Each structure stands twice: as structure tokens, then as C-alpha cells.
Length: 389
Image (cartoon, rainbow, N blue to C red; front, side, top):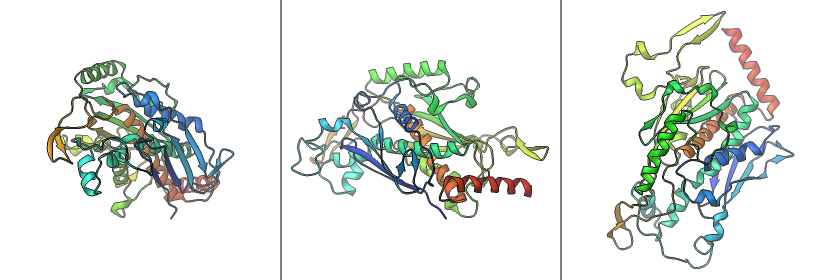
């Protein structure tokens, strides 16, 4: 069985971030401008903090690609942290520590637990790696995976559906017109396709900023054009819905995931929720997609729809009550430079993680050392599925 995997490395204020992606076939043409565009989308959004004015993320490819095509070996991706020059004394790999240690833990963050678990004396040793800056490399990896999916006729897009209690009107959003990577870059955009709701979201963000507070929200990721039968019902760890949910939950600040109608299933009877099947000229189709494109842990040919909820960012400009881990005394939590709202950024990260899991599922099912092998295997499988039917 072929396997696709990746690792990321680097700290929020270290010299650079790195990822290694292994398992893609040779012969995949990469467009770096689209990957950089996704990195820019991750940085945009109303309510983002000052760090976004410093970093202008650009991916460098250090291995696994020659003259624009993958070679079949590990692909090394890297992004420079421009802000490192302001942190060289505090983030040096060797020498004596500089600056005061961070000892005021933030509620809702990895600070306290990580400080104890890893036996550190400075919370910065935890917050640097647990920071969502790490998702830069997930987006870069996801960008490569989206190139792989694009070559197979699969698209992955996302959009924000709620921020701070302000929700879109689904009737105003045509999900078939959500553009993802091809959408215009808007520094103040929220990746929201209901213009009226977006303005109310921005107003809510301004209120939170004025109060020194933060906001969370929800977003949706949609994948179209997938082969039927990715994933499996055979074992728990091969169910694609479980793997998608796990990937989304791995994103910093994500606290809940649903597939398709999700928790709405608790509100209505089966007769109202299961997607009835119809047939026309031997083609099976459905009028609804409450299952979110997944049944029995496998893709069923409908668009895959995954939603996630992001909690408000734990770093508040009006800090919450906490403890000083060094003095063992009550204190207000520390203040790191942060965002008031990053749901739009999280939606792009979610897009990347869904793209990776789907690319992984395709590589596992169809294998192949070269893109020609993968395409031939998919074509043969599709023909067999149609013939058997």
C-alpha cells in the first residue's frame, strides 16, 4: 500500500518553518504561484494582528522537484520567518537565554500543560511550537496536495459560515461558485460569500477588538470530483470520515467537526435526513447531500462537506485570570501579539488538511510511482465500477 505523509518543523519566531511531504508520484507539475496564493489567503482576513504586516510568506522548494515536476522522492518545503531578525536574542539555538521568561500561562492555550509535561522553565518553549504559525507549512503541504488533486479533476474549497454568532444565510451562498485558490485576494476579506453577513461579522470583530477580546466561528470545506469508494468500512482507522475529522481537529483552536448535516441529525427523523437515491439511464443520483458525500466511511460520489468550529483565540488584550507558573501566584495571563479573529485563516488551513487526507486516500487506493500510473489506475477503476453496475 502506498502512503502519503508529512511532518512540519519550526517555531513561530524561529528562522524558518519547514515541511517534508513524502509519497507523491513522479511527474506531477507544480504551480508555485498557486501555493503562494494559498499562503497569502491564510494571512488575510479582517481582525488579523500585526504579525501579518511583517510576514509575506513565500514557499521555497528544497528537494523532490526538478524543472517544475515532482521526482517521486520527499518534497522539502520551507518558508522564512522574517520576524526572526527581531527575535534572534530570544530564539537563538545556542548561547544563554535572553529576556524575561514567560511565566503567566494563558487559559485555553497549551501553556500550562506543556510547561509541566515537558519540564520547561519558560512557557515560550511551549507557545512557540503550539502557535498557529505552524499552519503555514500545513497550507504549503496542502497546496501541493491540491495540485495533485487538481490534476485528477478534484477541487477543494472553503468558506466561512459564522463568526461571533453572526451566520451566513445559506440561501444567499451558491457553493458551486466558491473559488478557493482562484478567489481575489482581499486583505480585509473573511472568505465569506454572503456580503451582508460579512459586514455584520466585521462589525462584531470591531466590537471585540475594542473590548480587547477575541472571536471564533465556523467554516466549511467542500471537495468535488472525487472517485467513489475512497476510504473503507472494513476497519475503524480506514474510515475516511474519521480521518477527515481527525485532521480537522488537529488544527490549532478547532474544537468540533461535523460531516454533512452533522449535528442536525439529532433534530430530525431518518425519513427527513437520509439522502434518497434515484436512477436515470443507469446513473444513480441524489437530490440531497446530508451525508456530506460519505457513507460507511467511504466517498459516495457526492461532494464531500466538512465543517469545523474554531474557538476564540486564547491571547486576549484584556487578559484573563491565571497563574504565574514560577511564583505559583495569581496573575493575569501573558499577552503575545495576536489576532482578534482568525476564522478566515483557519478555513484555508482546513482546506489544506482536507486536501492532504483526500490525496492520501487516493494514493493509498490507486498507488503508482508516476502520475501516468495513477491516472490509468483511476480510469480502469471507474470503468470497472460502471461495468459492474
